[in-house]
View 1 (cartoon, rainbow, N blue to C red):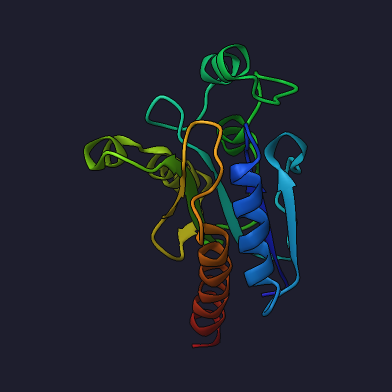
View 2: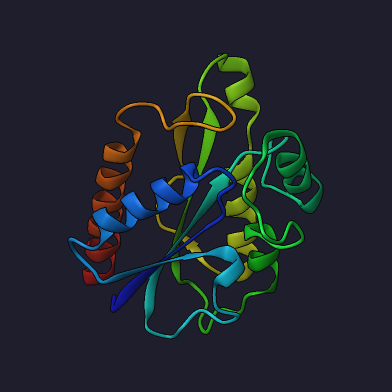
Length: 177
């Protein structure tokens, strides 16, 4: 694996912080780039050996234009273009080869267990990764925020770094065998 690419969508900075922490963990093994979905490349570069993508849960799934606009209007989210995010990037991006190892993550409000189980952003992300032709390298990971705007629950950035390290080791081991 030459390098990893982490693509994220974030409304209040929590998913961005998780993406950066995952990249920090990955970079112990492999050079890693982190980019917001709105600025991500139209084609995954050929030297990318691992794609990690994620963002927040909005209305129990990945953000859509309407939920982004709602986050801006109701909660003051910092979103320059509500029409584009991770969902739209995954639907449009091209992968140079099939079988690229990939993993998904999401952020979700900590709290009631039943509501937490209903949040499906990472599941929807994995489905879009499958349509892209990637191979799921690890089960999706979920990171907790204290409330809609955050902050991340204590210890979640450290957990994201550990997950990044474990993910890099898993992909490296699989590629070597």
